[in-house]
Length: 510
Image 1: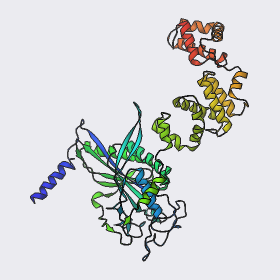
Image 2 (image 1 turned 180 degrees about the vertical axis):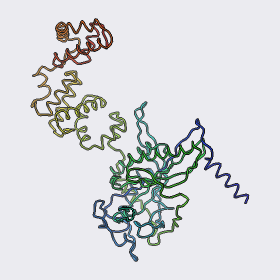
Image 3 (image 1 turned 120 degrees about the horizontal axis):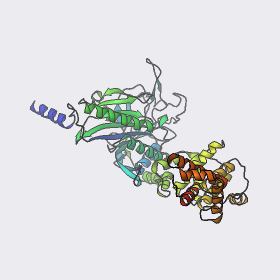
Image 4 (image 1 turned 90 degrees about the vertical axis):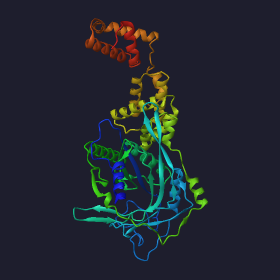
């Protein structure tokens, strides 16, 4: 009896000290771990010859084994093993020489066997890590590393579809599809970090053809385990199951952190529960952690221990692609990780950038500002962005290089972009600049000063108002004079040069 009281006291002190509210200045830290269930991109399922087709009609790609028909036996798909080895190598996870399949017993309508074949105690690999990029305002980017516990190979369940309050439909097309489950250490502290990790992990797997990466189709599903740590004391953990959207994952985790924090500050208990997300992204309690089933893990009797041969590992190594395109844009072109990743996700835009950026003599930062100008120009002239014409690619490069050499102003650049988009010009950029007299007038040029004095003389009233007033009236006159100078010079004088000339000659600033 004394021992029981002692353990209860310890549990209350170190695990669940929630009976009083948390003081305002105390440090509260979220502790988050993930389980990523990743469907392997193979032609057939893990233990049967049934094909894998995510878009097939319901229950049309199901074998007798997938249905759990008595007397049917599993036949291990070597390609699933190879894909799991590739994932293990990419994540620096130690491949085990011998692994074993187990039965995880539970009953659910979309699991006809009454158990799942998985790897509990002897997974295909242990440990490992994955480093991902995060935006950093001070250094442009930083990397964060997440430790992994293990990677295990297992079969997927079917899909339960809710018809109405009284009926559920079962689609077993997914039943038996090969999965790897990647279990991380609780190294995340925000929903944004967890979402960034999964996004970049997905891209690595898609590039290496391990997974299709379509979360909305269930190719990847994430379980998030969330708890709070207050001054070293850990509180009960909740779990959000089957998150199928990276954006939704970030929001759901942040919402759960806020919910738990609110409970602590109010001196209430955090119940260890399993949550599930509905169609709107709202989390509801599925069950209490105290109600978790004893899965009664037992070795799978119909599959021998799996001995990983060294030739399999070498074959997996030969398939790998460790570096991704967005990393080149981060390191070589000095882009922020979020911008680089968004770029490579947009195939058409990425294709345009690949064909033009390496050919321009301008910084990547400057290039992307002008790419935004191109997008606005496309909107003005009703042309699809980005343009896919090779002829325009060439003209765009010429225009950017002409601007970078100070041959044209930004306004002339924009005008010419619109005209080249509409195919109103059939000659090269340099010929157009020369033929139409569009060369930029620089502030120290004799012709610039001639234009400047002539325009100021013709607009003496505006000049006088600018000189004789202050505040907003002066600012308006300044801007009006600047715009007149730029317009009458056919945009060959830049806005910046016009402002500098006015300030220098009249001593007025806006």
